[in-house]
Image (cartoon, rainbow, N blue to C red; front, side, top):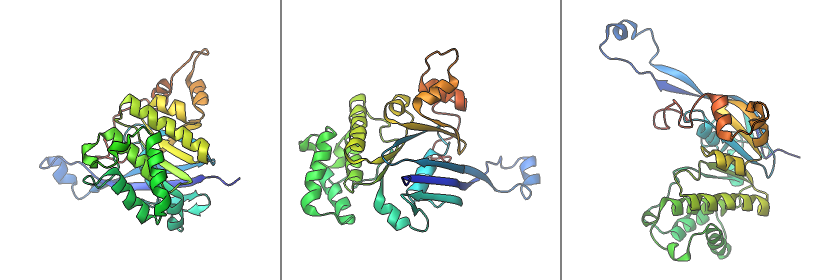
Length: 284
């Protein structure tokens, strides 16, 4: 059976401006010797595959390369080296075909905030050329299953909570019935009830349609509950890849029960927030 996603020796490098202490004798002496920019390996020759209908999790601290990898898969960035295919289609050579097979939900979904949920969904439906007679009922069904009340569908998004907005982002992504759904920290900042509703819906969607899902998250319980396999990424490389149970057994001593959080600390030596900078200052 063809893999849903294959990543072979993929590499992405960013060039980040070096911090200099202006005016110091050292900086003046070496200003012409030391390059102004330094290379950062955001994704460092990753090789892995994801099976159809699998929920594949990626855990890592800020700056580890999670979101960069998602952007490479979604064709928003181009790999510098290596190859990434989605159901056999190359993300560089066949990027338009790949875009027909995928959709993405990010931690900060972009909307027309002055428009209502249904107006935003209508825009997305027209952009993808969806039939008007079917997408409205399907959107209402998805939002209802996500726990969004019908009286909220026609209020401006700027008046809705972040949890409600994120549910609308999930609904928008699923309108196109993607074969591969990329979820980049979709429940970050949500209240426990909204988080559980989104998680339940992800599991339900996989069961109903066989959707393949790649999930990045900082929530260890979420990863443990949803994912069939989990990769732990650090400095652009996978330091471990296994089932949740397999990862726990790797760091367990004397058969003691361990949590995914303990696995994360053991494999990366970092807290969840990490020592790396946030997306605003570094790659993630």
